[in-house]
Length: 287
Image (cartoon, rainbow, N blue to C red; front, side):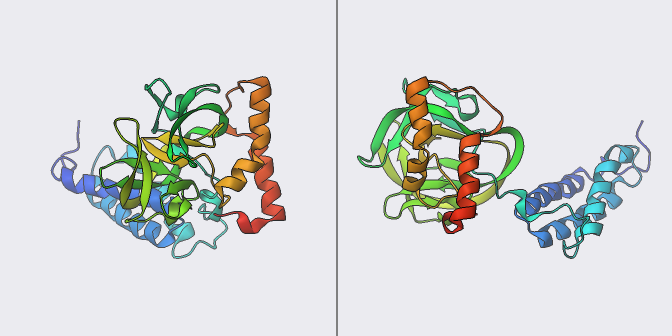
C-alpha cells in the first residue's frame, strides 16, 4: 500500500523529468565532463528529495541515490580527490562499433554485428574502385557485449545512422579516412543504397550517444558495411593503410588456418601492437 503522503502518482511527469538526469550523468561520466556530472547530480538529488521523500518506494532507490550523493561529495567541484571514481581512461581503450549495429552478408541477409562468426562472408567497401564487394570475417579485435561505451552517432541526410567510437575511421569522398570525432555536418560519406550500389551521402548531424555493447570486427578487406554505411575496421592509428599493413599477419594466419575461435575482450595480437606502438611511435596513436 502506498503512503498517503507519497506524491509519486500525483506528479509523475516531474518524477520522470527527475530520473531523466540519470542519462545526463552517464553521458558526463563517459565524456569525463565533471561539470555536467556535478550539475546533474545536484538536480537529481533535489528531485529525489522532493518526489520520493514520503514514498514507501524510497527505500528501493535509496542505494542508487546514495551512490550519486557519494559521487558528488567525492568528485565535485573537481575530481582530484583520490576517492573520485571518474578517471581519464574511462573510454580511451574502446575502438569499436555499437553492438546493436547490423551488417549485410554476401547473400543479402542482414545480421547483428555482435553475432558475426569467423568465416562469415559479408559486404565491405572497396576503397580503390569505390564499390561494394564481399569479404570474410577473420576475427573480432574486441568484443564486449555487456560494457557501456560512448559513441559518435553519424547521421546522413536520408536518416542512415552509424554509431562508432570517436577514434574509429570512416571513408569520406574528399578527405580520405577520417576519425569519427572529426566527422561533421556537410561532409560526404559512403553508403550502400537499396540496390546495393555504393553512393555518397551528406552528413547532417553527429551526436554523442551512450550504448551497451561494442564490437570490432576484422575482415580480410579491412573494411565493412555497417547499417549500410561504409567504415574501416581500424581505429586509434590515424591511418587506415598503416593499420591494414601492420595487421597483415592476422590475414596470413587466416588464409593458412581458417576460422578463429570466439572470445570476449581484446584480441591479443592487436593489443600487443597497440602497446608497442604507444611506446615506440606514440605520435600516430589518437585518443
